[in-house]
Image (tube, rainbow, N blue to C red; front, side, top):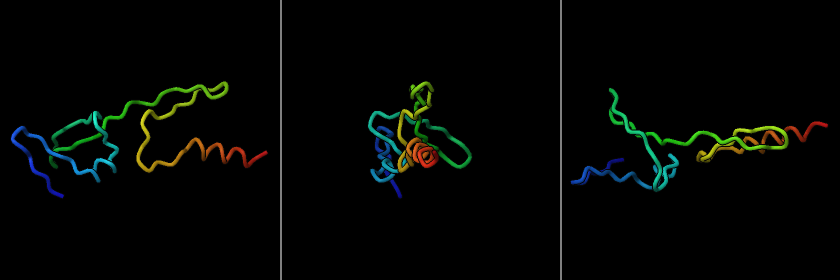
Length: 82
């Protein structure tokens, strides 16, 4: 996929790639230069601690695209056993 750099040095990331990478308007990205070229990485805030019953559980602050709901899977597995 190709894109053009405008006079101001801006590049438009195609919508399909933004959606797959989880990039949203106002989101923060890290730009680095390495031997392979320029790398863009989404900067996601760290997990937040949420009290569930008497426990503190780490929950992601940003949902990853197409990520399974791990908490629901764990709860489903726990409820299978008496």
